[in-house]
Image 1 (spheres, rainbow, N blue to C red):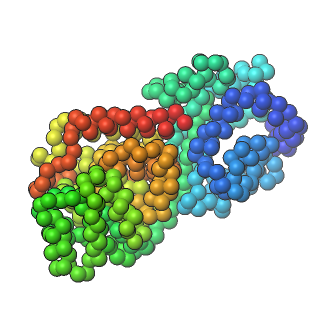
Image 2 (tube, rainbow, N blue to C red):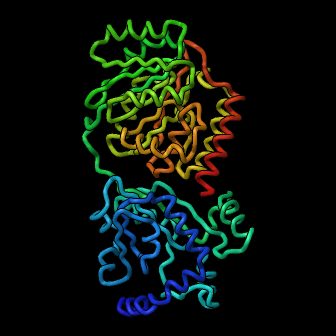
Length: 430
């Protein structure tokens, strides 16, 4: 079919498009819910392949533009043209049919269950990813949806909300989707100021080393300690050492009690003045010098949320107990599957993101609720919900030289399974 014939075809079928949508309203409502999940209200939205514009209207954009197959559409045949209207904050959401379903879709058209369309190019997921890569876009998330495109009571919800998310079945969905972003140009490495948040409780023996090894980052580095009611002289040590390092701006915040790391991190972020927020555990199992790598990853556009990973490089003997190692690897598999991005180490204390992205996570915190005493998952889940690019940064994990770990393997392990279920329910069943 020529381009002119296709234009005539879609113009003639426009009048019946709403009737077909009504006939297959279950499929279209599920597709609408997916796009509502990845595209917030009041966003600026360009829909390529907008049909009659129903989906675009349902997304409630602050500014919406729909383009379909017409002379105007030909300007968008190449992914590269999208760079004219996208920027670093833009998220490109692509849906298409899974090539595995081609025979069934053709059969459904022949049986009158689906509107007939001209023959199309059935691109595999890898083909779309490669096109994006060649045209300076990188994939953030990908997956499949809809094992059952028709509304069959009880069966459809079970297949689409549960079975379609399980191993093996998760690659069989009718619709494949990709969320991508423009590969950013490399900015100046001195583009940001940094705030290093150090939650601490009974860490007096680590303070001197922390000050001594803290690197200078970007336009400036401030150090923010949030103390959880230490009784070993940690507060006094911070004041003593900071007086000997006057070039480092220091803030010391009393947490008001031993309320946990998540509370300390949030209080530190609220007091921070830097463009970039960094979390560094006071036990120094991740050395301060490694913050240079995290800074560079953000400044060079390698990711928007940089998550430390202790499970890449060989670690010092005694740095992580065997059961902790097994637990970390188990939760890595669970959360990589749940979040749709590779997460090798969920509990590394060192995490870095820009202030602007943290504010977005904070604004959407109610979606998951107050469930995380560590703070790691609150940030990871929030970053995933916002489709931020999560990049892992390998770190050399050291044995703790002073103080005691605050982690209980069994009690906190059960809590991690609970958080895994929350993530599954909120991110996979939505």
